Image (cartoon, rainbow, N blue to C red; front, side):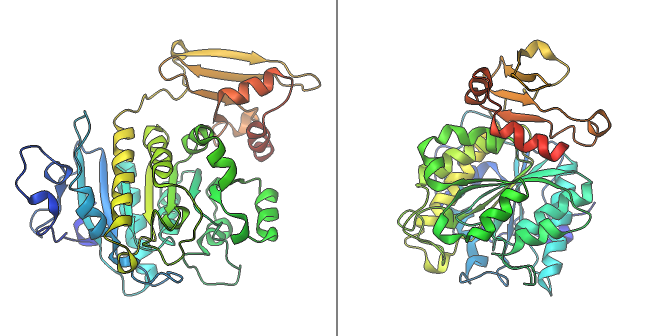
Length: 391
């Protein structure tokens, strides 16, 4: 597929990395679409950056359409780690006549990249672009898990048009539906009504309050490792750390906590797309939020190039298998521990006729704590959540 028709080039002159420097920065290494006649070649590429200058559905955050180039400017000035980066920057998706046209272009591009084993890194724009990201997997016929790092659920009301704070309900109600699980990391209770919390429980989705996540950040790793796509609303970070957002509040993650979560995403073999949304340069203070998003992307890239490729497979020599019997439970719980990374998975009982459909869902990333819970004759919550969906 010819993707160039969906993009406009990046206006690179003036970016800080172009200043004379003895050492290569990311801006020197990334093959960027700067001239109409020279669209980057995708053969052999691992990661593709794409901007979306779209904010027509943004709520209280007009101006976030300007974010892609501000983030690029800071990203290009960073130095890569100890790896050979094979990254392209495809430019900015052309703004459609209607927002739905932008959705179509973005979903088409993402689907093509994923189909070619290239991980898209989307710089928005408003968070309703998550809906377009989801549609890409629909094009590919993949049943997926979505993880959102966000201070709220973005359900909106059923009758509402899609927007940056109502895209999730459109994904849930969309038919045919390819969403297996949704996980929210870091919601703040005062931004979420109790009906929404109850709905999430009824849908067997995973939601984790900000305070609980911050108490044990390492427990986020298996949550993120279970995602096919990750959506980040920069309002999840406290206002003092990321002022460039119209919905920022005094509470939220610290910048380094967000970067740790994003590095977990980079390390995940399963994750195939990630998007950063709602960064608004028009209200940012000395590019502070642009810096943070750029550094978060750096951590994703760094994690990506240290992936262990140790998802449990037929090559069981790379794993230690643990079988735990639970009293009054007919099925034994099976755990796998990777010899490469010491990461854990658990196998959830799945009807034979559904195994091919849910082959990417019934092996669930977990933590050592889940294993010790099972050893205490108790079934981990993670196991129950998935089991109920498979039954």
